[in-house]
Length: 271
Image (cartoon, rainbow, N blue to C red; front, top):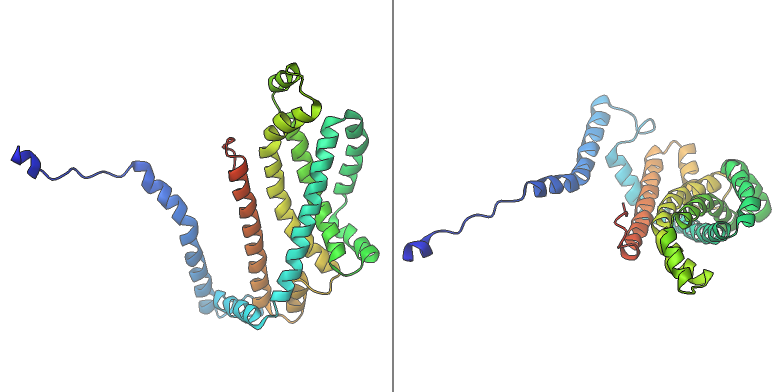
């Protein structure tokens, strides 16, 4: 019995898939210093001028000076307002129209061609009209962002509502459920994964729409700062502002993914 007690416990071998999962999660993080290091090395070895292609160190200095000096902060605030408010406006309108068009066939036949026609027009062509009608403030950029976000949310909402299982709908009808109850308890839960897919697409387009609007005409914003830095050949600041834009897009998209995990926990489709 003592010999049995003196036997050392067997080591727990790690699962074969655990190392692979750890490597897959660490790879995106580890790739950042590798890419930046190679980038810095090529710039220094080739002695490329900063006004041709800046180094990561130069971009970092420009980013620090812009944030610490406060010159970037007001631009970030303006662009964030345009993105968030325009995104909310476009997605709410897209949800409303998507539910309405999926529920009423006549409304779908009348409105869908108009929606497609508006979305077919490039936003670069619409932006000057918005500037003329609503001025150089954030209002015109909010409308541009809203129009950009409208279509993906609308189409995904309609697709999700139409993909609901007919047996569930018939069950609620057999229990004397109203059309509103069918929408609330059957159609919308089935459509939520589709809706979140449209929201994630719309968020990416919202960032693009805000910058397009600022390029056409604006008093302040990240797009305006990019144009100013590009005009003075300050490419380090241009890259720093682009990095800020990427960070904004990643954070906002991650927030939508987090909400999807919490709300659509049953679907297993969040990505």
